[in-house]
Length: 479
Image 1: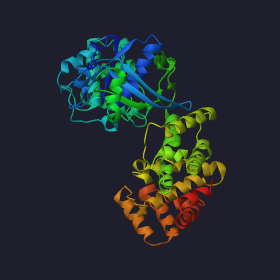
Image 2: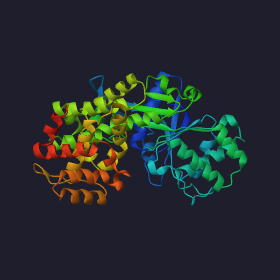
Image 3: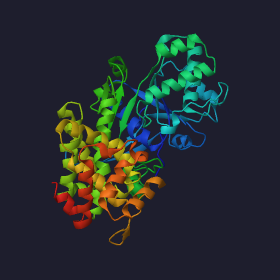
Image 4: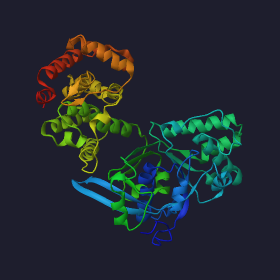
């Protein structure tokens, strides 16, 4: 079987280099490159990507060995039907390592057709490091490297405002664009790059916050040989992802006109604010995840799919999602119902084994950010507590008690202070004290949740029911 490259795969197309991408990992290749590949097929975008390695040790050399080509395996449910596709993605033109060839990196700034910068350098990547210098080859931080590139472009094109860049960070932090922009401003000031460059950056360039959503397991170790056989090539860069995708970009219509991914039949949205979509994802995807995991596990189930397909736990998941969390959001109801339906399909993905124990890492902080806001809003709007969310919190408390589920040892993983507190509270043998103690802990909540009307009583009652009859009976009592 031939190694995949542009010689062995002459059908691969060549496009104009329009995008500089910081990051060469599985997520970007399964998300951004796939979106650009689809956009090239459906519109006249005709763009390719130059991949820049953002840290000293990376894999652009692997990309170059295959001339940027690789296959993407998408798996999941779409409109209830299983999808298991395999496509060759041909939009990466080349990879660059700025640590080995800094001059070639800076020369990217001299290409007039380059218009976009896209990144995913992990949540820690968007950070200002005052140790970075303008004459570093390259600056160690991603914002530092980007500022070097922008400054060189400004100088090369003599401040031409038409040569500004459109920048889409994809790091998983809220308002990633605002954070990145602030870092660049700090470097402009630190390096004394001048008022003219600062004005060019502010006026000619756009740094836009984005929200990305796609589960990417990455290289398919379990069936790589089978996929290579199916593709007809020896491909060392195989990538795997779920079929669902969503990219929300906080940018005006003129940006959408230049990057027409939303015209290619893709879930790419250009919106005035990403905030409601961030809230939607955290509430309708992460929120149910956080409570279904302990409830499902203590009911004898092991994966998210099993939870969703179990008659009782599945009903619990839908109650939490549709009856309790969805009404707390402020987007149009049809849009929320569509997204919730997509989430259920993702939870039921037959190709992914998502173990609930992996979701239960740091469950209390997760409940605080993902479910507590919904609990408070539901109480405010409905005048009563959401029983599913409170039972989910009781499930977390019970899971943190430790002990065994059948032959399996229950080992909660969280901050040692939280683990110690729960151990102490459960040692009293009094579920009321457990409820009061957990809700009062300001280290977890930064407030005393016993002040929420009725919450202490309901949590204590749920804990007592779980202790007396088991989690499954407690679920039956509310569905």
